[in-house]
Image 1 (cartoon, protein in one colour):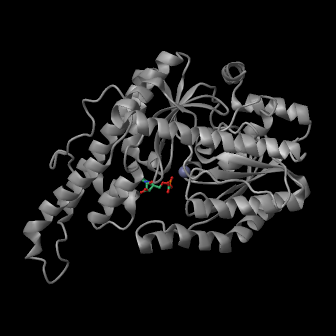
Image 2: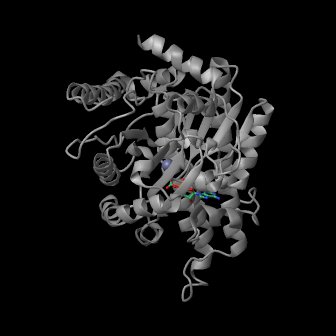
Image 3: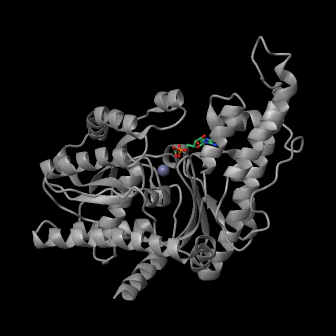
Length: 451
Ligand code: KG4
Ligand code: ZN
């Protein structure tokens, strides 16, 4: 049965792009449907209204940037408090900006994972509450799937930026993720590579901070533009490892922090009474450029291996979608465009507003699942995408939740790296995720809460 479902998904993916799928759903329901999306997986409180044609009617956000800067990162419990105070206003703003009333909506979609558990719960509870109040289905969405499908969104009245057909490759590089996915269809993904330690965005942020740059990755990029990457050569992570496409940024980060320390030493005495250890701006720029160059080469190397795997599995893969905050870096873009072109693969970089965490992508992923409702996808690919419930009903959060299965090549390597015990344990965790979702669905079906 599962194989048949997978075949149906692939067939759908191959022959219909997302818009096609939505149009099919559209016809079935005969009217344009609107979905309210809610996203609180990290420290941005977001709500948006999106139509089944991919139009973003509103996109309300409340950011915790100042807190993040103050504490040098996200403090989950603090972020939860801020989400709680912001969520009502953000949802109201999304509804008002879109000029819609609850009765105009077809569903509420909400991120249920992965992310920070205390933060996820705020969004989930709110979504559950209003969906019960407004008598709407509540669709649980995987945050990464939101990122993967976001390219089809557009402003009202404008055409879609890209017509995207499955299968395609996705690279997510942000503060929260470094991930390579092969997308075969809605709810059908293979994980080709992920970060073994810190994400690319966190690595940029740490180096920027040590260089005395308060603006994180974007400021590092600006400073690197006037530097010489060859002045402080740094080694590129995992250069010789061509048998997998996982990332590792922690070694490069440490190496760069050491280079900064070394460069600071001679200046400590001179500048003791002013700004101890501050670097001359030329050195700062050179180190920033060297770090950026090594990080980009690493991400390009891993993407090239992923391209090989993807093309071997599905030669009709035509596009590489690059999303996440780091995707706005011009050197990153240039490197990825070059490598993709050499494989005759097109690249798609969604606009910055869709690259970063947002609720429009969550609403859109919800719509895609709602339209694919006739396809009995299994959790955790969000099989029972459309849930209906009352206020007492509880949607579980999935703070650690893989999207799709690891590629067989990567699985083999996981066994070598972590041993049978750890891999088996992670398999059980995945199975448990699946089981708990399935059980939940059954319970709801029994109580007549699901269509
Ligand atoms: O997707 P995003 O906005 O949110 C989170 O995942 O939290 O990504 C933010 C990350 C930060 O680490 C930021 O420093 C990095 O993306 N970033 C950049 C650039 N713009 C944002 N890194 C390098 N170059 C950039 N231009
Ligand atoms: Zn994200």
